[in-house]
Image 1 (cartoon, rainbow, N blue to C red):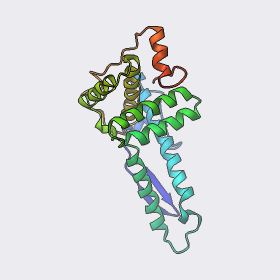
Image 2: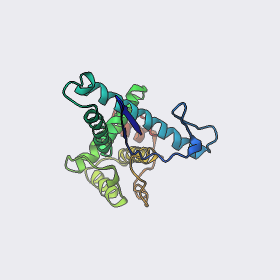
Image 3: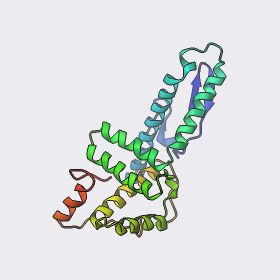
Length: 219
């Protein structure tokens, strides 16, 4: 990513792996027409993440004191501030609580209120399991997910509700991998997790009611 502020240029490394044929430098957009179905989904995720990055940069610039008045400060220092603030924010995005909250806000804006609430509900349960401390997204591994699952079952949480938590956390993890927020694990962290959805309607309603009044959509 290239940031230019009042003639001062700074470059920031991003995790998006894009081929030359997939980038339109004139328009500054990704090219999806010639991508296969799987690659197209990945590029769409990249596109969404890039829009998020640009909004973040815009917010940093608008809220930076030096962007409103450069008196007493050099343009180089202000450009460095913007770049460093962006890097710090992106680093924080690799934490489960921060990333899930960001997805929650985007889902709320898209009108997907139940899914948004579901993301926060499952995230809070996992953070509670971690004694209230936020969790790096690359923390996910099969052993830890199974331990969390056993803890829930030990509390008497129903299997449909446990399945809901696992499927929701898996969706968040897969989204983070797809957007290159974190690299994919060599082993699927949710391989041994209980994610069955074939439950009786009454049980399914009870599972949903444990988290919010109505069912949600998990991506």
